[in-house]
Length: 271
Image (cartoon, rainbow, N blue to C red; front, side, top):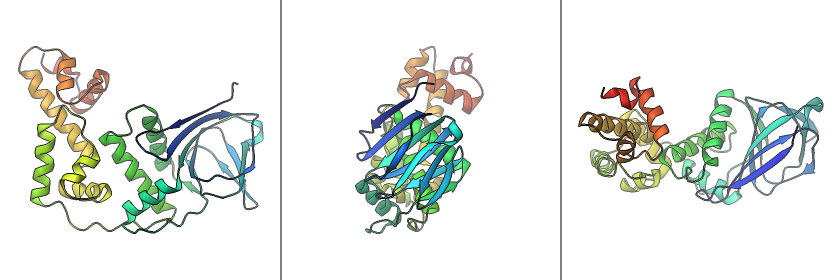
């Protein structure tokens, strides 16, 4: 088996570096990091030693390693394993925890291994999404990023999320809705929508869902697909043209989303 390690800074999220590695014979000597690590094993098992105890990290488990923690890592029983890691700078973690908790104070981080296959799977998918250049700033990726980090930090008891009272006001909802309708072909970000309401991103996410019952990304995706249906029924035009008109710049992504929503491909919708 060929061992490898790949590191990728995420330009749209300063302070975040992704790593993907495959190990068999290689082992990590005792070491520490200056940043906060979230580790996931997709295949195999890693044996990790810290504070005089040994933990096994395999699929469905999440390893949290704060700055300065002394630890090692190696394949269990001579096997192989695939490791995916989020490396978050202390500045990035501090800004995220303040945004989520509403309190300008450093998080109380400690090492932990969480047994949560559902959260681990969602973090794996987020890792894959952020690996695609230009995707980290999308509404979907921003929503996943904040939602999953909030869940992760809450489960590790590093923070207490801010209580978000109430829903969006009628005026706030109207501004968001009109903005999305008028810019359907454009990239729309969480920062833009939250700014329209004078809210932080985390607070906006919570209040939007309380108001509509869907995340901003899910609502906008449905809006784009509904508008695509209207365009498809107006007469013959290329599927790619329709996809771009409603904000999809990847026709295969448009086809998958359309089929999932309506049960047929766009080409058959107007047949």
